[in-house]
Image 1 (cartoon, helix red, strand yellow):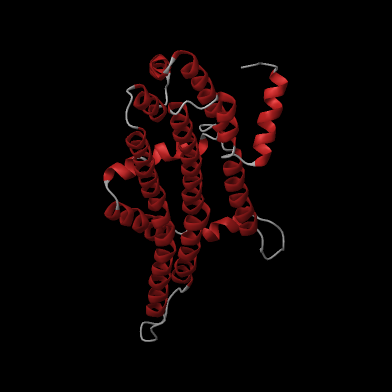
Image 2 (cartoon, rainbow, N blue to C red; image 1 turned 60 degrees about the vertical axis):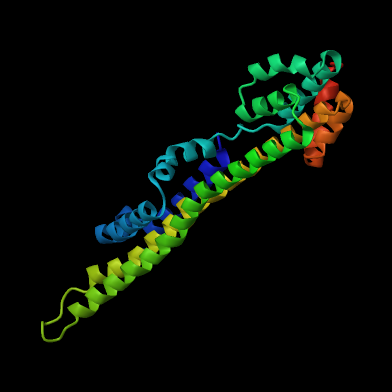
Length: 274
């Protein structure tokens, strides 16, 4: 589970709510202060218009993928480069002992579709350049799809403050209308509240909800892309007959130094040989 995302989001809302409850006439924190920040008209304008713009800008398939996006964000251990490196080293050992055709069974057991596809490409004895082209094209298309998903939340992050300003204009117009001297004036409070609270709602949606989601989706995309690049490099090295020990060292260059040191310590601690 993505603890940092949960903690950050909860703390941000908690701090904002505590701030809203301060500033009463007695100087103490009062729950009644929260009522000042609830305005149905503002909610209707900002949330309703933002959602409507997303519907107008993206296909239904993109909007239907929202639950999948949240599942991706919350799964913090979906991509494990070290586990992939270990699998590739094992495949290299099998290939050196029994040949590339012996990898077909391993490929059929693989649950990751991309990993399985890459294994089968070299089992089928495809040309190395053509096989790599297919793998890299798969990665490029995957990145493009993920960018479309993150772009939807980025679009919402840009639109929400804009409709916050629209709500502000609506509130100011109503306030000015209420100041008509001939009609005897009116209650300016509700109109002014709508004018200000809509801006608040727009900022909250943009920077506390949609912005972090877009950032998290891009981080997951980077993690997945790294794992796929490791797979491509490992599979191409296996096809060329790379030594398993050399392959491990080569693939570890994709990792940070701290991760490499941890992998080396774990390998020594395990006491297992090749």
